[in-house]
Length: 127
Image (cartoon, rainbow, N blue to C red):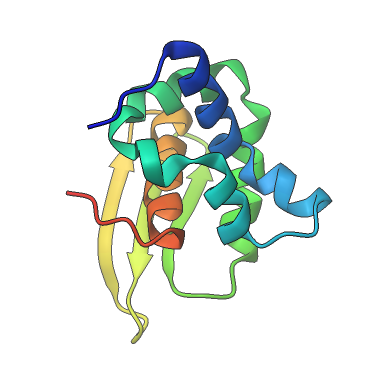
């Protein structure tokens, strides 16, 4: 198992958390951007708490992930944030909900969404 140092880990976290921003300004697919992020190589080293911590320092990204979720033209995971309601869900190919979970904070919900969305795009199997 490969491990990463904290400075390198922070760069990888920043890259995955900034996916919605980077996607709008570069001529690359989300898959290509995520491949460059090296998340697939080190996804076991990056925790949900790491993502929450990053989002807590960069709260504007939560809104960008909401927009990402709303702009998707595919099935799969979605993020829903409204006053005092933070939710991640997933729809199957028949439009039926096959995952739904509410969270205590927007950062927590967004971190869950990011990890699930990024893993889905890269076809990483998580527990």
